[in-house]
Length: 465
Image (cartoon, rainbow, N blue to C red; front, side, top):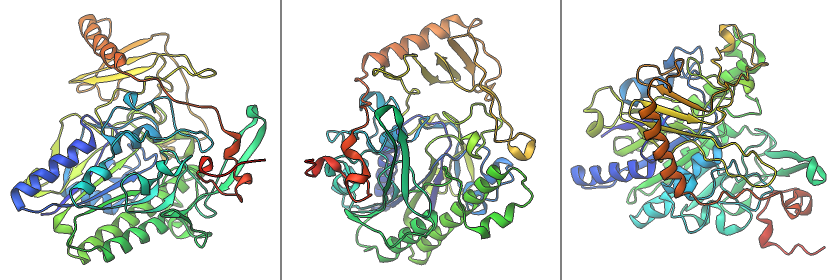
């Protein structure tokens, strides 16, 4: 009973619901619980995968898409933390307080502990849960780290990004009185792991996922969340992958393409491990990205518009009971929680624009300033990654029929005022249920220099002096 699912940058029902529905279907039809492998790429664009006619080589993902069900209306949030929070909880981020932006390493902010994670729910059903890769949901106290949120093991980093080889996260807050924070961040469970310096993150994560699969006790169902950093900046990759893209002249695009191909190979290693353990036929495998490609860091979303966020991707699923054992396309609207684009909070010192996006049927409504509204071709199509248009319309309300106009080129709000009013009312309904956004200022006690040069759960430590 083979199944695999790669997703697209649009979404409609949350993945928690999707997985639990899948699990119930398998239990009913086969009398046992499936293994679940969810693979999340970081900043992978719509035009950054081979089967979208991209020049980037993704043979493994292309084959999964060819033989599986592609989910063609699957949405995610525009940035890292909100997407990950929604995936793990099945809740809109307007209901968890994480709608304002990402969690910075120095912020005392995290996914609230009163939110139940999918790992905790699956554990109740006997699953062994493992997180390999990026967390990015807060760590200022130990109660917020993966091993305290339902995962039996954790191998990766707690912050939002790092150097692929040194595994250090570096950021600056000059307005708060210190220029840079530079700390090491790589863990096995709750212990610092320092013997991986010099090893490339994507390859490390794939090897750990393979180890987990090979050592898994087949008596228990497996949930593996493989959360890659790739192809998120910084742009770094082993030379053997870079050599495949000498035909791409733009340096950023060339390195980015090589990073995607490295990740594709890693996915292939994981699927091979599942097959070698004879787990593949009982595995639901999902592949998604957390948001769109960052144009100025080599990514691309052509022919869709915007520089990074809110991009539709594609999905596929090789599961017999979904695809009837043949490739097919599904157009139901899906989301890792059917979310409207973030209602940005208004903490002191941050943007007071009221931005929102809502998809309902054929219609998509945008409010406020949509950011980069240009259509940016890939570098190999003649556009440099060094520049990106940042044109803004004077409008504050935008309506598109994304079934007829998926590239959002024809703004039609004046032609359909009744649709606009209906969607505005729905946004107001959602807004009335929103909790305040949490976006605290950086905490100086978080500085890695106070903790041996390491990002740690600093509020659990004695910080006198």
